[in-house]
Image 1 (cartoon, rainbow, N blue to C red):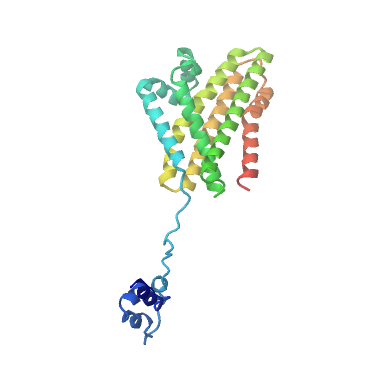
Image 2 (image 1 turned 135 degrees about the vertical axis):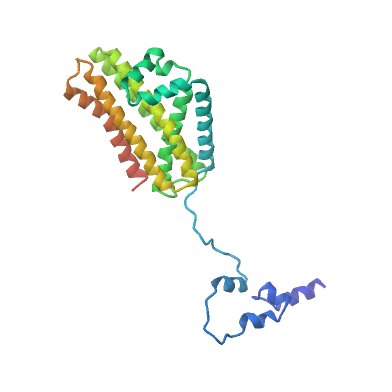
Length: 276
C-alpha cells in the first residue's frame, strides 16, 4: 500500500498539490491563452511548488528588544522621580534658561547630594548611550547583531563614563591650580543640571524611534542635544566671567578644551569606526 502510494506520487514529480488532487487542473494551469499574456510571478511560483514568497514591503531596521525595555525602565524612573520630586524637576527646567534657578537648586541642595540625583543621572547616561548606539545602528546598518549589539552598547557606556569622570577630574585640578573651588563647583553642578534635563528630553525621542521614522527622530534628538550643549557652553562663559581670576581668552580656551575637544574626538572616533 505504502509502496504503491510512493510510486503514484513519483508520477507527479514537479507538479503542484492541486494537480495531484485534480489532474484536470493541469489543463487550466498550462493551457495556452488566446490573449496577451500577463505575467503573474506569484502564481508561477505557487504552481512550481516554491512557496518562498518575498514580503511586499521591506522593513527598515528594528530596534533591539533590550533597548526598548531599557527605555521603559527610564520612563519608570522618571515617573517615580516626578512623583517624589516634582518641584525640583520644574527647577531643572528653569535652570537651563535662568542662572538664578540653577543657583537656587545649588543652595537648597547640591545636585549630586540630592536623592533624585542617582536615578536621574542613571537615566541620563542610559539615554545618551542609547542615542549613540542608535546612531551607530542607523548610520551604519548591520554593525551589530544579537549579543554583539549589547556588547557595543556596553562599550559606549564604559567609554562615556571614563570620559565624563576624566572631565570632572580635570575641572577639579584646574580649580586647585587657580584656587577657585567655588566657581568650579558651580560649573560642575551646572553641567549636571543640563545633563539631567537632556536625559529627560531624550527619553520620548528614543521611544519614538521604535515606532516611527528612525532617521528623522535621530536628527531631532541630536538637534536637542546640541542645543542644550550650546546653552551649557554659554552658561559656562557666564560663570567664568563672574570670576575675576579668568581672562576672556583663558576662559575661552578652557571651555573649548573641556567642551568642544571631547566632542570632536568622539565624532572622529565614531566616523572612523562606524560611519565610514
